[in-house]
Image (cartoon, rainbow, N blue to C red):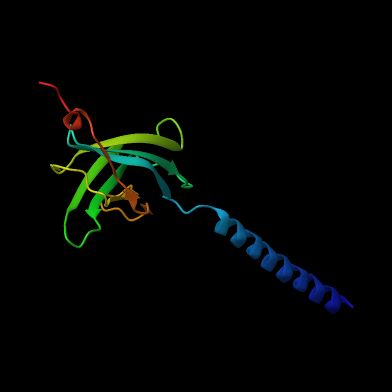
Length: 157
């Protein structure tokens, strides 16, 4: 009888340890991995007067650890037209974007290429990372709007 009780105790101990291991591994799967950035682009436009790109982005820190002290946002603009080629890349460094909360809404301005007219098929792709070479949050291609300012208004002489 004593051998049976020892066998049952060992069995319960093994099953309990195995159950605790499974429960602990499920919890780890749900936790976000350290260093997760989420990037969402609200809009992007090119002002023909100032010759600048302006992009409205929202960054969210979903990491389990502390938020990064700086974030790099790479902006890539290209044309999807076989007759024209244009490829422009700019990197913006944002210091302490999450100082107040886990979300940051940013407006990024960068010098653009000197366009003389609006292009119907200019697209931007945006990446965000805590490293200089982005490796995390990537946005889908976003159409870039052209803003016709004072330069496009007819003037009377």
